[in-house]
Image (cartoon, rainbow, N blue to C red; front, side, top):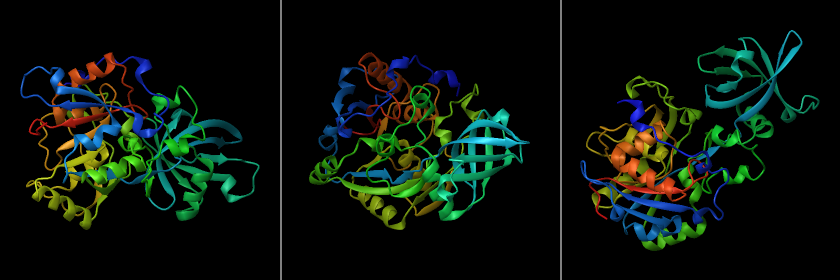
Length: 368
């Protein structure tokens, strides 16, 4: 499909720089898909709050969350080459092995294979105060590979000591990360280290909201997708078929797969919290819609025309123009529906992107 079909005017002021407080006070636009070429009207949209979610779901429905934990993957370093230092910033994107990470570098033109980079406090002799790496490979579009001098748990601890939370560039270019982001840019149920971007729809949940959902008879289940920085990248090709997705590691346990299949068997709905949870389940499901235990890398790229296998409802934040995520929601509820819904959101002051408000999207086949 033509990429420009997914373009729209988004005011710069619509991108949220800070999260709602408390988390579940964020606004939520409920979007019911319309059939074919039918126009979206006011009956198909409802301005709600995230706190209204229990009343919008049914007993027997299942919420699916991504339990990945964001690591402080934004690193500032000094490149040393023949005693000529240069400042370079990195965003780690994907772990290669015990001591190597893929990363986006800015400015990458300052780096060559073999360069040494030092992170942290260079005057500190403690391992956790300084971290060294070698540029072991250099790719396209600013991507490099870093081979660190330490590995495994020691490397994890060192990154945690010298890194900061990797806020999306749309936020980071306007303000520096601060101490509050360590908690704010993390879901309350984060469990498995490995993401370099948050599964942001999950940022809206609180213990109080979990209790209300349980009282409503809505179950909760967890999958894992270690979100990569590729989620930040716009589609720069003229045709979506020419865009290359970065792969991300994910997992669905046998217990979770069985539980979700049982929900479907009883006519309950699978409600994914975030596009990351959706992409994991759609990667794990077979053509009959049965969710299989699954572990591996996925580069699934969902655009209009995709046939969804198992997901019925999607809760997700508002995404940027020409992004793979706006393409995904357009596949889920229809391009015309989502363009109209986003127009409504912009006119009514909804907050966009990682720290922004939410939408609750129903597929065309779902009843209100």
